[in-house]
Image 1 (cartoon, rainbow, N blue to C red):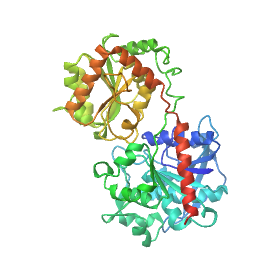
Image 2: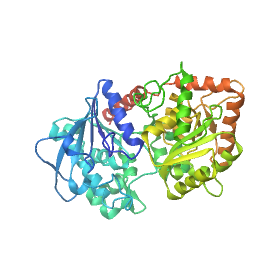
Image 3: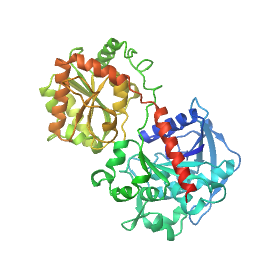
Image 4: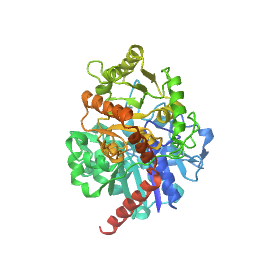
Length: 490
């Protein structure tokens, strides 16, 4: 199949979160299966033109009531033959930030910027004389191509092109004033038909959900959760309506980068047959974080964005958060790597000063994130909701037992510990409350001190799981085939 990925970000070129990792990794996995996969995305300011190859000639794009001339650059995903095409338009993309910057977290011209990407997708195919079997768009910023395909473009060379739309995080929807709708290039007749209307505003994600031939999310449980009001962010009704076209596919893991047997960023490599070497990473982590070196005390690691989605209020809230009580009452050490909301950063600094067994690094450090995965005994993810989650899978691969809330991809990847039999791969809490976090961490610590044979068995069991992208790629292949088949029956 010929598959065109449309995205606002992809590693290593532009990234704000897991979307970027998923798009690049899935593209590579599909290419390894023999598919002709290509990626199109904007060329942001920080993507250096000098490291790209320019396609000859400008490309005219016609979004809304205007004609825009763009450039097109290309490169390969590093170490692969997968081409990436960059739409170059200085006025739209020649700035810091993908969706916004700290002082302006959501650029007010985002509807214009990403409408340009949508229209440029089809012009690029014409320029290349390459027409995909499937257009696979990711999140709201790339939703317009699936909408344009349904209402404007499904003719000629695109007559047999199907569309798939992946919801990576339904909390981000691209909602803007409807006075900006003309920039989409669609007639007002399509404002309601395509699903843009959202309480007298326009919603890109909603229109993508309604217009795409098939829908996916990044884990099976999340696909079920977003059909309910608690997790659906007002989209639960239309997702229930389209449930027959919705599939949850668990994201994979880049096992070349995240592999304790060959990870250059950890103190000592190891695998399930040499787990004793994990102790060297624990010692290195304790020294790095300024904690007492003690192999007998369990370390609870956390690598997270400090946002409400990740359960940080229940964990670190200054009034009722559980972290302070955990570190005072339970014999363990806790290490945190993260950045985000200022109140939480300040609270972590306070905990640093108040607790001798707590250490936090404010910011992000790739090497430290790997060392936390390798050196910790447990990894805590008390997320409010989690479309997929990657760190719990990294943890399992590194023999570090996850402590997670039962939601989204966390529920799909972590099997709760059975203290009678020793079965399971981690510790699961049902409800997100400070007391529930406290109790579950305490349960894990109890197992550490009293059921060490169970801990070792769970570690090896987790390290034996397969989270490679080849499994996910097969599932996406099936969705693509269903999307193409649905066109034949119309």
